[in-house]
Image (cartoon, rainbow over the protein chains, first blue to last red):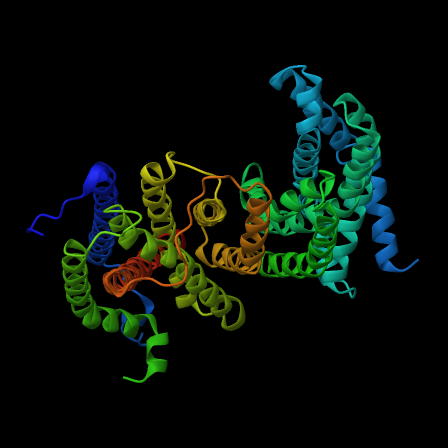
Length: 62
Length: 218
Length: 244
């Protein structure tokens, strides 16, 4: 057996299955990464505008 | 009259008077079954073969589509809040509402099934089998749909969400219902399992629906 | 850091930030080893080289069920302890589960075309996985129709648990239905003895896909926590603008 395994008469189906899996998994990774960037950007924008979470606010001098 | 029987009578009265539940479901069932020969052709032998399956699909859709308003109407006029606050356990209240829905929607479907069976060229034995299977199986459809109805009212979303959530859960009822009506050697077993499914959903459905109402409306 | 500290979203984010790079590396290594083993795995005497599809089909089918189990545990967390992180876990797992189930169906039908001569047969396994896929889509639809995440979370938790009770029944009924309508040429993969040369790559690929799920799930949970933070800040801003 050489380096390239012979995929037999159904090579197209095998390759298609692996390609489809790669596409879907890459899509998931891209979605998660893009979503992370988007949320970080939104949080950054809000921070620039001075909106803070309650836990980040200094205790008010009453 | 206890609160629960009063609720049963009230729900049945509402369903019959407004006509939203009871008669509309039967009418819908009738129309669906009428459409079948128009879609697959008037070949009587073929209709006889697929007849029980068509009756089951019609009953499934009819009982689901009428469930949509089960809690929604009560929420709009505020009576659902009273039921939530009342002393009667919410699970039983929900079960009673399901019973009222079944009596006004499921039972009429079972009653008109023999007539529709004649349209679909079924044998008398097959008609009896389908009617009996529907009698045993439709309470399960009501109780499974109950969960979807409670969820959709808790989410304040109606329309297609309810069937999308509920139809996959009705797969077992459909499979064993059609098998029980098929008149084959296995239909005795299918009747037993159909009964088991109904009993199980009678227990689990009200609990899940009550939980959905409690969590959704607080 | 004690385990209980992870219940705090901020600490959980810090935990994810520390763990995620290692998980990415571990996933990559597992896939490298798995694909290497797959590359040099021998052909099956019955299926020929088509058995290579099984190395991605079986892990995806396994994950399609595991993800529902994970969501069910999270649903208990939502309903019993009302923990916000349980919501987050359930919500971010649903699209991943749907994707894995979709891959299981797709690779299954690509395997079925050469083996069964058709892309789709109403085989018991395929049919019940199809129903599972529909249930994932329904769950995602539920999450998407409701804006308030807490309200959607409780509804989704109830639906998840109802589904978890129903899934074995659906599986059983579909099996029963299938034996009733058994086709003649249905080829079954021998459930008993799998040759070690096939089993080893299969297990490694299973581990790799499980790690992939874990990595993506933690990353998606982080996104969801941030998304809720953004939402809360927007609401606070709107509230402040109204009050001023």
